[in-house]
Length: 136
Image (cartoon, rainbow, N blue to C red):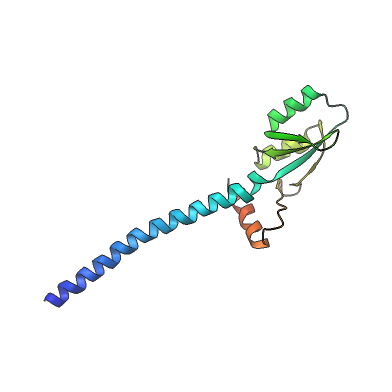
C-alpha cells in the first residue's frame, strides 16, 4: 500500500509539473511570435507611395490620414516612405485605387498585403509572418 501511495504522489507531481510548464511555454511562444511580428513583420515594413503630380500637400495629408500612412519621410519630390497601419485587404485595395496614388512599393498588388523585404528573414520566417498578418 505505501508503494501505491508513493506512485500516486509521483503521478500527481508530474501532472502538476506539466500543468505549470505547458501554459508558461505557450505564453513564451506567444510573446516571441508577438515580438517577431512587431519587430520584423508587416508593421515594421515601410512602404513607398508615389503621389500623382496634381496632388497638393493638403490632399496628400488627407490621404495619409485616410489610409493609415504614418511617419512619412520624403524620398523624392513625390515619393514618400511610410509605415502602413491599415493593412487589411480592403484598406490596401482602397489605397491602391486612390486616384491620388500613382504608384506603390512593398505592397503586393495581387495578394493585397505588405511585402516583407528584410534580408535577414528566411523564407520560412517570411511565410510565417505573412501568415500571421493575414489572420489579423
